[in-house]
Image (cartoon, rainbow, N blue to C red; front, top):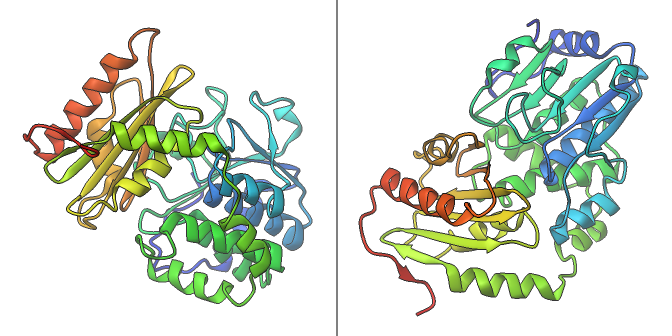
Length: 346
């Protein structure tokens, strides 16, 4: 591995940029991210693609798998990052000089990299560090950063590229979504970049993304989630059952962590043949990425950072209820909660 892993306290230098360029030349580059990508993934991929094109004249294709169904994320895709193309199974991989993976890692189980195919470039900020990283040419995984968007912005800055208002708005919203407007984590570098980009964003488009219209099924799903939520001492568990979309667990967890007296919220539900998990914590000393590793059931995969984590577990037909029970039991054991659960809406 000729790349590097650095602390967010170390700025991206020209040696780093040289090694990144060597890893992707001559192009084109295939840029991938995790399934069901969020704003941070969409923005960081677009920023990396812009760097390749503007700084080095290297073309790239942005490809994601899964679905983008959260209203804000769909609005971002359409208004800010339309370059991303959905492709469930990768085709013609051999036509690219390199694969770059952003906001995910090989071996994480949350991307559509074919087994045995290792990307030359990995840019991420999630725990844990996967052993497959040793095979990549350029690795930048910073566990003390709170968004991959901030990391890719640093590459632009090192190349003296000032993002236009669409790219600036994309990166800004990527940081905003992963840090909840800097109220949830946010390293000093995330904060500095966020405030710097605030002057460059298109506020009209940003408002359209943040205030994206919601379908009726969204409110029905939230009602069912609130009815299913149970309080165990200082933690909340919500089994959503069958979900209309996999990323709904994250929205539910974002809401329930705000419940008075709550230190952690775990939400999960099934979609197709997987159970998706989303974890939120309040204590900055309790890393959600480490915590979720103690909860996940094999052969499931999970990751996270700071106060946010998520994962998914494949299950056999008819076994969803059993797996859900095991998840709840493991979570309560890890959190040391022994109280009987009581419904949130009694």
